[in-house]
Length: 317
Image 1 (cartoon, rainbow, N blue to C red):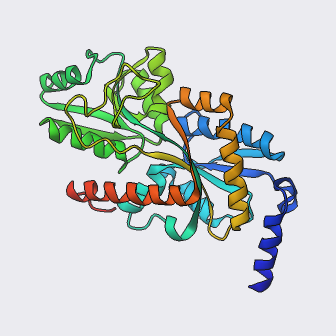
Image 2: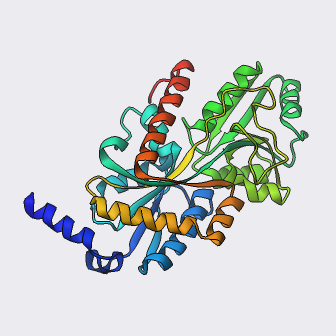
Image 3: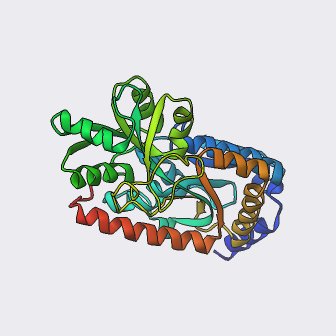
């Protein structure tokens, strides 16, 4: 044990490019290529590679709402070569809805830093004859009060949002889970499903190209990239004000010096005008959170949704 600690301490003192036999740094992503999280990770990876002077690779491990990638992070060596780019669903929500997710964020991960918050949004397919949330709800009522709404993962914040939205309006809205946002959006573009709930980073490009219509966003205020789109609260639907987050996580046991160095590198990267501008264009509100701040954010966010999930009668699977 003493030898292992000494080795890790020595590792922490080395520059990134000299570590672990000059192995590249991996950024694990729990969702498929082509989605919002993948685009964000690739942007950060390219900028971090230039900043750190070592190869940074994006390693997609899609499936189970990020569970597979999270388990890969848990199994990774704590040598400063593996990090996890994740949002709230995998870190805060999965442990609430699964009896055995295969990881415990508090024990198995170290929060490195947070770099943004974002909003989930309700979007309508081009073939849906509605241009706003009130029009969509009225249209669903004309269909007998039943409607299918796509969500990028089962037992996710988008699924609970669909459930609460239906309950608040006396509608039978059924959340249809997909394996990530990309296939959900594909079905929306093909008018196979009339509506979907996903993150603004996942939906924004197709909204701007008028292939989809984002009609409401979560949060206390409108999103800078969508100034024309009202919040749910503005439309009289309260309860969707707390915004999810994006952060980087490392395996438990990663030396604190490595965590601090990577956190500092991330802070420098998101402070670059070109990177910050691109992240904003993708629908993020960029802002640095230290390791302690990210840990506190995750804890408070999980507690808030634990109350919502419990009130809705959902039982962990």
